[in-house]
Length: 198
Image (cartoon, rainbow, N blue to C red; front, side, top):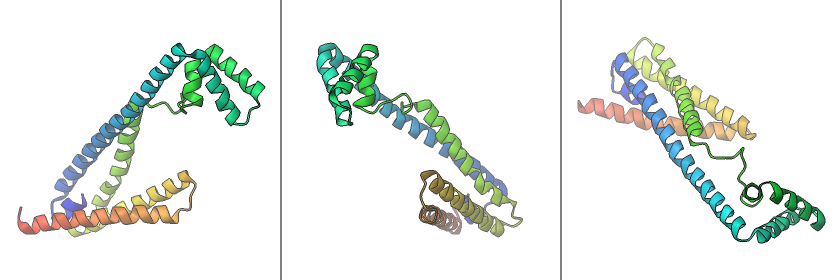
């Protein structure tokens, strides 16, 4: 939107560019996330197949391996044996997926869920610059869109820092500077396209 506004386009043109950008960005984020998480799911399924084969080939060896894992975590040998026996009596593959490889139901890859969440997050953030369209003049729109977007970037940086449990200053400055640099480049490109008469 900043790039189109810098080309002295009409309000309708800026809105069209903004909507197209939000839709395209959300679809790209969703597709990228789906592919990425699907690859993770493929790894999990391959690990499960491998563990299933190992259980069929050498169940006792797999049980001893589980005992060793529990001992390495501080359990005494008798208790490690008892826990491993219980786990192997119920679902040995699940036990090895969890204890040996770190795969749990909570961390299981869910491509569709990840794609929807990614697209929704992009749309939520992508709608913020539209608030800048309230400026009455063309030149004012560019400044307003940039200002509103920078404010949104600052909020995103603060929120990210709070979620991560780190001090807010560095992440917020990083997000604001990165976003501002991207807007500046985009505005420059839009202005140069306008000057070229394209």
